Amino acid sequence: MKTISIRETTASGILPRLAEEFNASSKEQYGEYSLKIPSKHGQGTISGINFPNGVGLFKFDLQFKNDLCLDFCSTLVHPFKFIYVINGNLTHQFTNEEVTHEIDEGQSVILGASYNSGNKIIFPANKKIQVIFLDVDRKKFVDQLTFPLEEMDEIYHRIFADTNAIRSLYHHTQYSLKMAHLVNELNNFKSTGLERTSFNGAKALELLTYMLMLYKDDSQNEEQQTILRKRDLVRIKNVVRAIDQNIAELDNISLLAEKEQISEVKLQEGFQILFNSTVHEYIQSRRLETAMQLLLKTDKTISEIVYAIGLNSRSHFSKIFKERYGVSPRNIRQNNKV
Image (cartoon, rainbow, N blue to C red; front, side, top):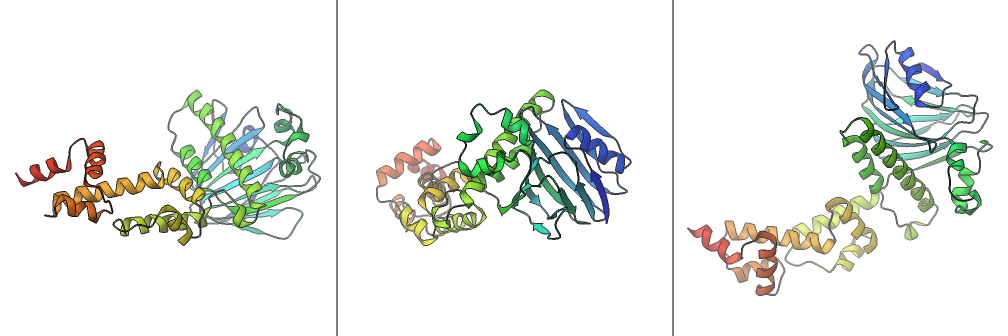
């Protein structure tokens, strides 16, 4: 396995160092450094940028031909690393420990190497890896705060008050749905120049916020947790399936949530993230879509259709149908017979 020792702690040092090892060249634009992996070593790209608030954003979208270890071994205080694995998997090891940690797809970790240690990140061979690192310079981040460090929540104070890296920190968790949404935004943003720099800076800070919130939420019992995770996504999709398959005889929202052992608050938040709507709005939309199909493809009367989609009032159905489609159900039926 090839190991690259990296003593630098910012993109302006890390990317040129990697370029040197790969016998390639790095590029810089508006403070963002990027590197294309030569075909001899694999394929893909690495990019990185640091912001004045102490937050750095690094993106890895690549596949190596051989196992590769990035050994972050600076003699300076290491930044906190907030890692989110989008695709593939990584292995992590503190340099002063023999224990290794597997970080799989859809998982995130917070790494805080102590002053006498460092971080080894291992990329497995022949696997498509897509990962985001947020590096947080401890001192810079604390110095730019507009309030005394002592006013932080205790759980955050334990992290950021350790500006001299006396302790190590390793926290491993599942992603939250909001984090996944932010990562998609970061990966899909196409503008360049100042727009890209501003967007990346804002989203990096937003992603850091959600990772810290997840860290805090993880300290609670599952019944008290409020942030949506992967396990909640499975439950929400089960609710969606129940709605789609039983549109005529739906339980109320409370019963739908209870059957899947998810709180109504999480259920509503999940629908906002997935569909940009409330559960009620999603149900109404599916009812109207089903009604349109029945009007176009069956001979059911409008009253029968109202019953088939779980509504009781024909007048209410006609009202919301016209609001959605701009035409009444009767007109759809008449035009379909012409």
